[in-house]
Image 1 (tube, helix red, strand yellow):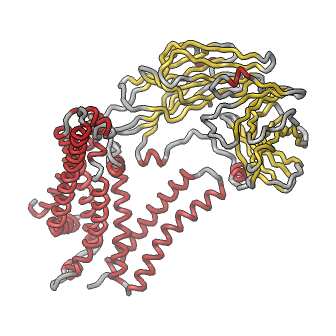
Image 2 (image 1 turned 30 degrees about the horizontal axis):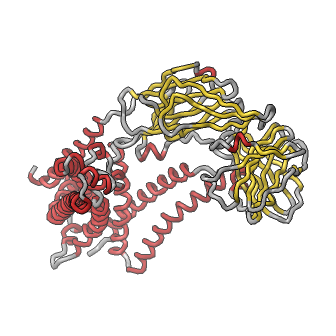
Image 3 (image 1 turned 90 degrees about the vertical axis):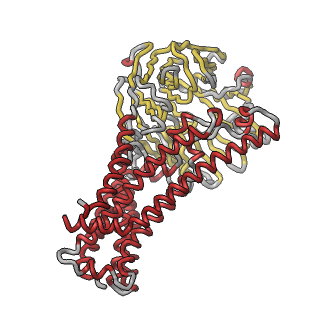
Length: 272
Length: 356
């Protein structure tokens, strides 16, 4: 436990610069996008007023109504998708960086006394902590964005009621059910487990064998969906919900197996 | 402690930010729904299910029935995964039949019908939602045509053991036929009408009452919604135009084995009156009817009806939602109940409404 905590702390320390850069980048991009949307909207209203010689209210109506919060934060979706991509890349990076440099860090890690499982667990915990903190920071920033939206836009140009309506990806993350955070973290764990497996197989076997094994796991993921679907449709026609439940159960079991294989690879096969 | 500095920083960030999120979610008030009877008694009507969904922050689904029971279903990811759908599952054998390319499916709130005409046979299958029973029978029907390939079959009405089917040739609208299946026998009969379909027109059968048939005709290439329909009554000897119905710009639905044609006049805005026109095929007279609603009804979009000519309708009101049951035959409001939200949550809307 102590070893795992120390290693997790070490992983976080080594990632700090990168993560600060990622979080700062996200915040700057979101502020910039919000300011751009607000400026662009106000500019178009003013232009309509000037050209058409009409009042502000008429110009707003002509432009399709006041700017909603979801419209103002429209670019947040793309930024969140980018952040999710960065997390996946980070899941690769957290392993590969240990093999980089003249004094390979992986030497030190693998030569540490005790079980190597702590190495794997610390990298997984690091990623989950990063994801959880990103979700939290994004939430706080969403609240700040709402304040900024209400502050920057004149009353006639804002829809106060719309501050509770987010864009598509925001709704996926902030459903207002705290239990969904755990569900999102479970999904993160599943995705990261498969990324870790890819890295560990690539580091443990010849490339051809590693790719074959990764491909087989990919096939197992897709085949599970098809086999469960075909089996259930042979039993009854309306088991789509059961299909989803069984598949989620199957993916969780497959993830547990992948995690076990990952631990075995770290313990027995991983070398410098 | 210094050795765990990074961990503590991240822990603190998560604690504060996710904690603020959880605190925020806990401060959100859900809907506090209750059903109040405004008129009549719930015991006099059939059970209904009104499904409401709250929008915005923490979307939740509420099922309200005639007894006033309110069932709340979480809309979280796990909640969605294990949510019970109150939709009647179709039996597998029947469902597989309906998914075949040659099968035409039609029906109403009470029953669903699947017809397949192929290889000189007419296969008829029927599923009744309330009893969850399936009926099926195959009839000899000599034709070279097949449903799904230029032929379209749909049930116009089912009266006791007789099923009336409209058979359309997709490329030849003038060759529309009216068939009758006797479910106790094995024959398919064609009802010969007194007047062929007018050139460039399409015919739609509306009601069959004893030997009388009501149908509409409109130009075959016209837009269904914006075209004025011409109504005709074929009594087996002659055809007469039903001018009274032509003048009304509303759609008619048959009730009571086709004896009554009822056209509801539902306003788009607010109303305290439900109005409808009834055409009685026995007296051949059009009469106007209405009932007053104690509540102001807004946006009446959800309707269902029973064989007993009872109309179930649900809509928004000034204070929430309502369910009304109207006896169309006796021109009477049997029941009205209002669903109010003590927390007055905004953005709630009707997701589904059906008579159980």
